[in-house]
Image 1 (cartoon, one colour):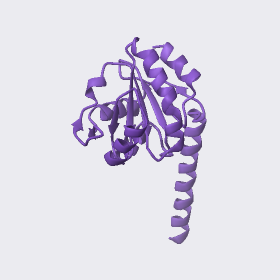
Image 2 (cartoon, rainbow, N blue to C red; image 1 turned 135 degrees about the vertical axis):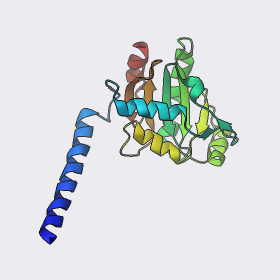
Image 3 (tube, rainbow, N blue to C red; image 1 turned 45 degrees about the vertical axis):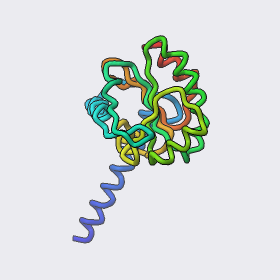
Length: 181
């Protein structure tokens, strides 16, 4: 019985390792990755639109207003250095692509208190909502199995995930994705 349990444990660990390796090979997390929509991604998009979020003042909000629009969702936190570093580039891209109808949304994986204090010090040109630690679950639904921040997702007007990016955005790469919309 112990050998069976030991063998089963090894098999589970091997399968998890294979799944993780496959994810990293299929989704290069050092570059923005374009891929076809999967049922899991469609579920993630549906979950995003119904997520419980608030504005920085703690008032409940809905992301459903972004449904049927191309949107860049950026998961971030006030304590995340790379998140803060990329915000000026995201703000610039937001200004540049607003005339094309592309929305940018910051989803804070943080407390409303921290985000409100942060936004009083740092100007951000796009809407920012507080998802709290539930935001990490939403990001995971989009394939962020590492749970790292920042994590950026580009969704077209039909609700198809066009790209995901773990780590700081590369403005030129994100522009290529947005120019294709």
